[in-house]
Length: 281
Image (tube, rainbow, N blue to C red; front, top):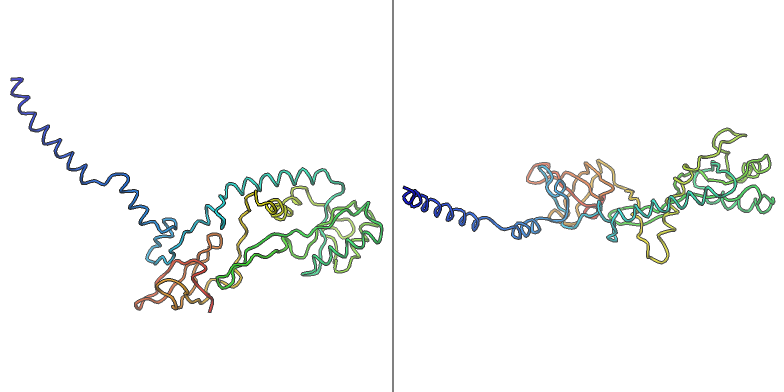
């Protein structure tokens, strides 16, 4: 009986082995799957690469979320920013005086700093007024698809002054041309907390720390759109719909992308674009 059972089971085992072998040959191996995935990946993430009921006209690598323009990992630049913040706070904590905010006429921040620096020397106030600072940051402006780095004031219309507050030092600052007053109580202003000052000065401190020898990883700059707004009419300048007019429906500044609708085959069709693929009409 045992021999009969083995003879019966043998054909079944052979058939099962043949079936498994055929399935293995029909299924693609891991390398083939990887190759297929790579061939289908155009660089954007899955949601942007296949927008619902829309077209993706971006044929480049959208790496703005993980890397900056120079290919520097954002984790690296974030680590540098944290280190600069710690160092800046330690330096600020050891300086004499307290920080006050002075209000100025619009666009006169740098002029106020220059005027105040001159008055400090003229009035011999070096022992009471130590420095005036206009916090700045580098911003990437995008205008008609063209990028330009500009330096802007972090808090327009204001200047930071580190000083020991006395009647004379208050008067020297208050009567500086283009100064409209101290922020807070007019005659008894309240100094800023150290963390507030560090936050305002951090962008320019990072720019200084990452410039020069080029060894430090540059910080990813803030990106601002100058002339693109939701509802604007634009013309496509790249891709299969070059020359077609479209209307902006969404703007994603950090990823430097936008969504728009255009007429295609008699229907309004949403398209996913990069900023350099459109130009404002």
